[in-house]
Image 1 (cartoon, rainbow over the protein chains, first blue to last red):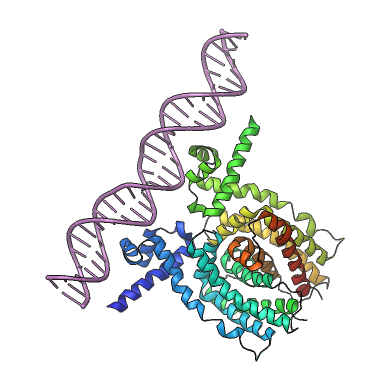
Image 2: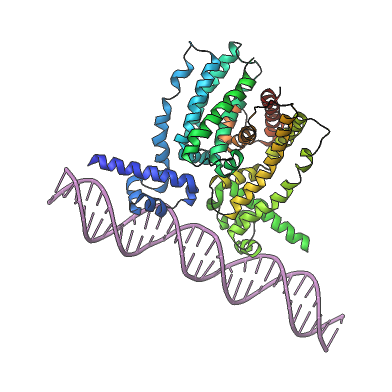
Length: 209
Length: 209
DNA sequence: TTATTTTAATCAATCGTTTGATTAACTTTG
DNA sequence: CAAAGTTAATCAAACGATTGATTAAAATAA
């Protein structure tokens, strides 16, 4: 059945996403990936052409789902800039756990700045998210709601940097926060509220007049 | 001469540090490293025992230099907590460019949390830095200089996360900041002042009463 | 049947590492 | 002093293992 084929493809992609995020591109062998996915090694090449093709398709699959998430927020005139920021932080906080592996993989790939098309695609994809933030922040400045001398780019770097730091270095941040951030329950009950609350307080102090 | 030996070892370590940071541990082959360093392949094993030994020694070499930097700051009673934070941010800002490759390599390795001794060593090394920050922040709270409800752990995550985000995703942050952060001159004249200034303003707003 | 999917076996290439030989500098011996 | 011995450093070549990829045959589906 066609359904089964899609399911199997998706299953392989799910497993590969995790393994790549754990071991990196070079560290994750096709044998390991196929083994974890419970399929024959040749299936990877059969479905995705090559290891790189598999790697690319992991991103292709996500990119489309990222597109339509934040579009509506920036254009809403009924609420103030700071409320938009709070909403943005709420969404951003929720995303921490959801796309854990992919986020790690994403910034891992962005890190080694290859000259590929992929890196450019990923950068553009992330910049799309950033654009919404930019719009909100500049709107806040224009309205006089935010201080006029805030560093918009650095605020964005702080927002994403803090999140990445926590989820990309779990050994460090677990020691720092005094609870295991690899535990899903801890993420839900402690990390999410903590990072949301902190970010709101931090940016409220910095942004608002 | 013994000097030459040390120089050659150090030269290999310098090159390996760069190559590892660019390609990752698995992506950097011993042939590539030895080729870039202009030495015979066997020299890596002769000097460092193994590829992992070489990798370890890169960190060992830096760890000691990291140790004694922040020790004196935390114990100085003559200046206030906020002044200490400012000094910390100054040092932290300077370190951005100096140890660019190493920082990248460090957090790249921390990211893929292997069960090695290395990861534990690195975590402890970073925690030592963090401890000093912890001391300063808690001192500021105790003295009533800082707000009493600040999230110390998250402040640390923000401080390092923001910096890592910028230096680890140069393609993104260059687009964000509108200048090339891989250009040494730009780092010196624009990035360093900008990140120092931003961090001071951000934390001043969040920490101070 | 025909077409698609899956398998085990195999490929050349590359991996990290080891080897034995060679060089050059230093130490010891006569 | 010079000859003999010792050492560390360096090299090209090769090692077995593993890599990503391919094949042809078998199994399944249409």
